[in-house]
Amino acid sequence: MITRRVSGDPLEYVLGWAEFRGLRIAVEPTVFVPRTRSGLLVEQAAVGLGPGAVAIDLCCGSGAIGAALAATVDDLELYATELDPAAVRCARRNLTGPRQTVLAGDLFDPLPDRLRGRVDVIVANLPYVPTEQIALMPREAREHEARIALDGGPDGLDLQRRAAAAAPGWLRPGGRILIETGRRQAPYTAEILARNGFRTMISTDDEIDGTAVIGIHPDVQRDTR
Ligand code: GLN
Image 1 (spheres, protein in one colour):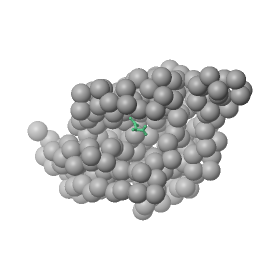
Image 2: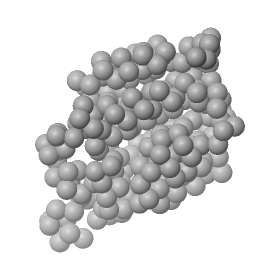
Image 3: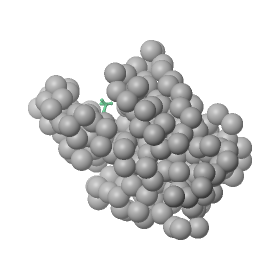
Image 4: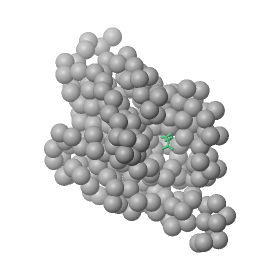
């Protein structure tokens, strides 16, 4: 294990798990390692959620954010979606509760239709690194994590635009989407949500270097175009 670590393998891959909000989250090589900063998403998402709430962890990776939210909210009904097969495997190891479902597929695609208009909260740590900035990331990220987990396109916001456009169809009136983003990207993330009809708020936590943009789905459903 020491030899692997010294040769550059990320500690979490050597161990096979990462610590996230007091949980051991299984991670295998190439799978995005949960970041402490994503705890902000968990904290903010949990606000006001009662027992039995319905949540989506979109592009869940290892499922860490969903697992931590489920550890915070009683009887959370959680649906986690993920495209990358290695990450799906890990998420299935991390989300084993009776009300936790991991679905393989792109963004909202694999979700059952019966959830439309019923979801209380969506947490989304989508890839948001601008393509050209991946080269500036720590070696553990740029050389060991799957590119699909990091690359957000030219401005980093491609996946956020796609998710924000589709999210209103899944949320209940007054439901929320919380998107992790970069500090400098936050106003743009907020604008993307606003353009899709959300009321928005930016939440930051300097201690853990976390930035989340929260979008609240309007209480009154707008006319469908
Ligand atoms: N800069 C972020 C991180 O390393 C990237 C995370 C992401 O793209 N979701 O935490």
